[in-house]
Image (tube, rainbow, N blue to C red; front, side):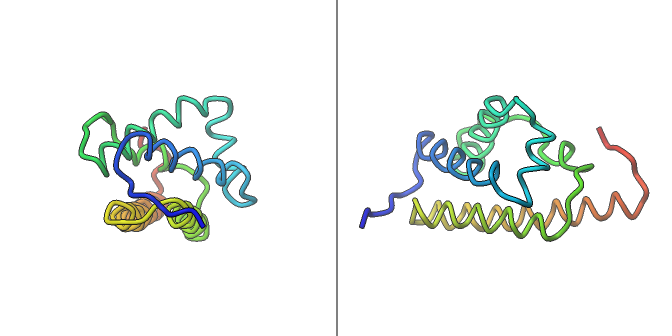
Length: 131
């Protein structure tokens, strides 16, 4: 059995992101939403996700932007966030251990919670777009 490694550097982030989004792209619930939005721009999206997680987990400030607006109008609900979290944590558990892996799970939980609350708020208020 291969020993899991710590999540410590950009190469580890790339491994996590690539593995995770490989699952997302073939997931029955999530793939249609991601593939419709991203289309053939997956390399650009993955680069952005590398920078995002590098900034969040490693403190190496390579990401700039606001993550929520591109998600505000997605046709998603609680089940989508639950599946996203399931796949993200599954990917972490398969490949990584240690404090940064725990932190990544915690941060993913908080992001999913916040995004869902904000999406629901915007829907309830009748906002059509924030971008």
